Length: 111
Image (cartoon, rainbow, N blue to C red; front, side, top):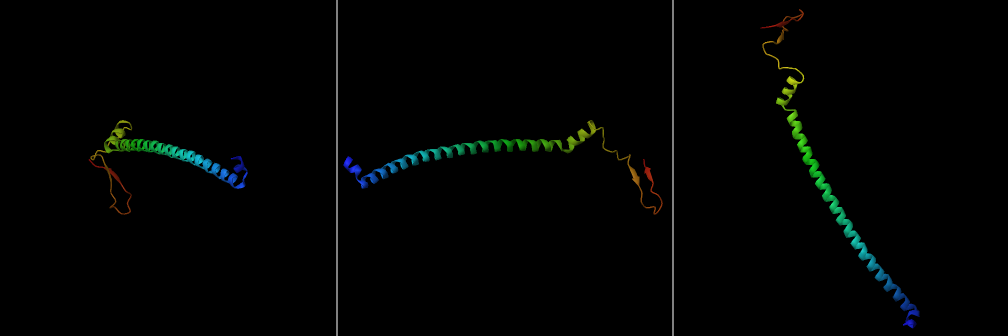
């Protein structure tokens, strides 16, 4: 066997076999690493989708809360309770007449 190893052709054959085995081992570990990194990416995508659904649900809740805060009934309650404003009484409205021409306008309180 040593005589065969000293021969140039068998030394090249031995080198090619070792490179092929090394390539197979590196390829196997590379494939395992690639598969595990893809699986990690899948888990990360799943976590991000879960977070997206949570944020979307929270955003819908906030939209519903904003709609209730801007409703006419809620606005009327806030205006009357916190700001002390009331809706105008139709009997206490000032009317401005514009049919007098160049005479100064008069504001009148009609009862």
